[in-house]
Length: 299
Image (tube, rainbow, N blue to C red; front, top):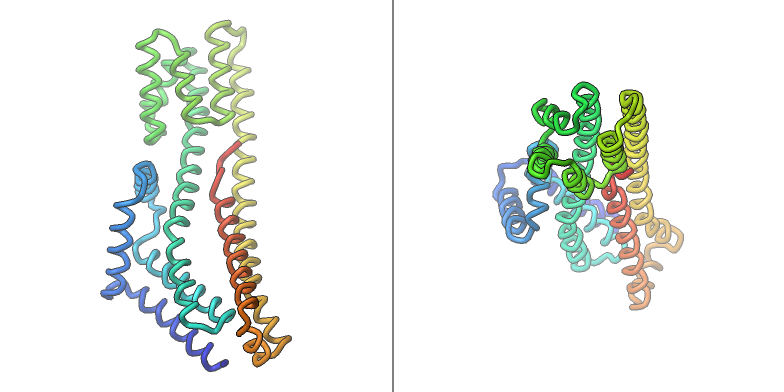
């Protein structure tokens, strides 16, 4: 049995090496088929997000995806074989796990895009306040930020839309409502509320109030970045813990003895219980991935 596990491990390493070459027909087949499925079924909004992530240079290369497929396939095959000692069952698990990769890609791209938007809103609020301190006019401040080159689409396009709305309506209320609904961050809403008060009621010393707002934004951003680092540490430890849960079956086999384990494995109820353990651990890991990638940059 040990020889079989070693043989399967060697096959797994061989697959990883094979996929990493990048110029093989199998590699090209996987990449072409994955791209075709993505282009056909991915939502338009996600295509835009993924295109932005790619333009930022943070999208996986095709070779990265091929290696990811090989690693996921190898791990799922090896773990399921350790549980059931059935090549057929392991192949089924391998196919199911590989099919989850597009969902993980979706979560990862959303996280990166969310982080990008948060940083852009930070730049928008900070620079609008600084421009307002000079111009003492909200629309002129928006124009200054728009022309400064510090923003990127889609926030840049939304600021331009705010400016157009303000000139069209002769007031800033609709522009602010649009931005508040588009980017539901506390720092955005607080800044806009402050500008509305200054515009409508006036302020004896608006610079002091705006300086306090800048300090509040800095504190808020620091908290979000600290949370991001905590999430990264949690994610690394979570993956290690999840893989350790899968390996617990090796301890059971050691305690029972391989022959005894193979004997009880013939019982249907034992197989069902083992499938339940594998599925529960997989759900546990997938939920952790979802938590790690969602609500990033939320205040």
